[in-house]
Length: 617
Image (cartoon, rainbow, N blue to C red; front, side, top):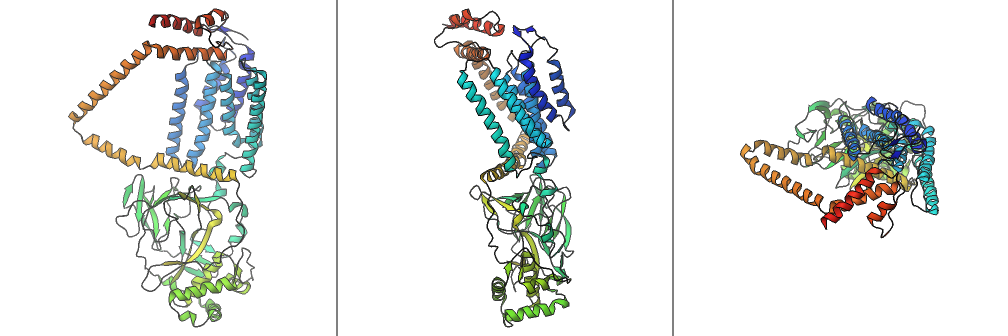
């Protein structure tokens, strides 16, 4: 099928290969997508074989597609979670490329570009390939081959050696990129699927109201230790982030006492409600935290935090400073604001020890030193820490003795991990008369970007002790000996992807929840409170500026500058058709040697340039 529209012949050779490329990309994009972009893409592809020739290309159509896709992504991201917002960026970005490629196909030969169709198709396939597993990778390679073939068919004044080098560089770059992505994501074929942005595999576990010693081992997975659990942006090192506090121990199980009650927010900071323990006027935010798991089991914060901020109307807050998140999740992260210097509340469970453990704990104190149990609190904790460090070792494999009390096996075999050390220390302190409780959270963050933000990984989950010295506040004591195992070696690509992901989350947080909104609200309040007469000078200045701008553009449009730019655009259009003006060749000579089937619009522009050029001189 051929045709002649606007002086451009349209043949199978001109549209079939780009049509196949865009059809492959559109097939990926059509999976579970809104009906409107699917119908638009299908209409464009279906119209190409039946049209006698291409439509003229208009730039405003491409800008319209970009604007609509941007609004689409913004609306969907604001209404959904942060995880959905990231994935929407991929999905809507792929659709944007598909629609731009469809516009290019409809105008091939009249402003459309075969190269842009190839790259739009390849980019859209790359964004959607993760949903199709290994099939997506096969299609990516096929798109790479089709892109190379498109470039080879361009009748442009490029040397044969240059075309060969460009084709092979493109092939190697695309294939190397596909292999690098597959290896970087640990062999997973679904690198950009929603699973990578926070499915059940990325859930933070182990922070419930009830926890039992020994349950960590069965679900422990070394391959998940490196997964990011939390990101914290703060100017000061965050250290320990407390999650759950439990005070009642019985037969190997810790239970949090019923000391939590529902609280409504004290005030609003942006969209975030501030939920406080005792502070009535918190300072500026100390940190903002985010997690790939938007339904975290607890709002992790440093011990003694006075207030947290989260997008919710109410949440549960315990007397131990545990902030339980709302059921809707915390996709927009959470702030913490101040640290309460007074935290001295003691419950009956903070001194409670089961009578069945008295003999075991008394034997341990006799081994440490019977007189140590009568020393002041800090000295007693120092002796207890040295006893653990000398006689016990850190080990994730703790033998079970078959009894209903896991601590007996821990004391017998002298090895365990943080849960065992913290539990033993809490009960030993209580037996000696010091109030203590069991706390879990995250420790030892990794600084990123020079300490501007910090990473907590799944392997940084930890358990420690909180104890109350006489006349003081609840204080942290960590009895667990250090784990001297080798640090995992993370490749450069993994570190880069973690940084990019963190920067993307921070950038989206600034756009969505940034402090700039407070300034905007303040200006809006000023404008609303200003009398109507204050608008007159501003409107007059705005009208004068607009008039000057229009006049300047009119003068420029009548001058040489506008026509020089028009000449450059016309030469670029003819160059894509294979017609190149030689160095030093005049426009008149170039016009004289153009073939009769040259683009009529370009010829008319060159003639108009000739007329205006001589008129303006």
